[in-house]
Length: 187
Image 1: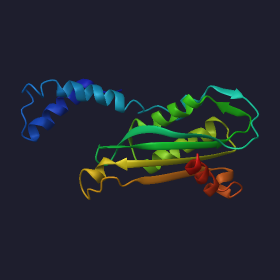
Image 2: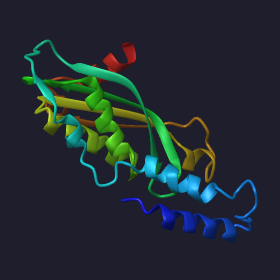
Image 3: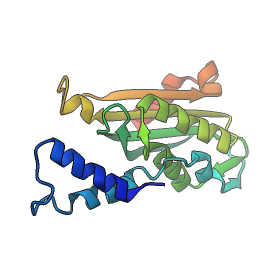
């Protein structure tokens, strides 16, 4: 549970530590705004992405892979507490269970809304879809820009990090992960 009062006090201390006056007009409500912001952007802490995949449907779909592309997300790099954001693409080969696509988006949100590493986030999402849908195979690709690389440090705006996580037939070569990536690129 987010401790908004403690966050507000901490933001006051940070503002003072950088030489600002937290009582000046433009900053007066900033500690409360940051506490409210943290409530929203860290809403996935302590939640299991499998919770998003509890409502599924009996549906035999033996036509191949189901792909949900271009899901936007925002997360916070746990090393610098700066945002990283981008697109996630999820593909799965159903056995006899499918889910509404909004459930996949919700699972993504649950793993993104916490201090995170992109590599871990990719794996957590793949594991949740694989287990939650009892899928035959899962492939997740996340393509993101990290503000910790673009606004500080090496300062390389526009650089992207792409991570993948593969489960089932995608991983053992029965269905080529290159084929999945080609499907993403070709729409």
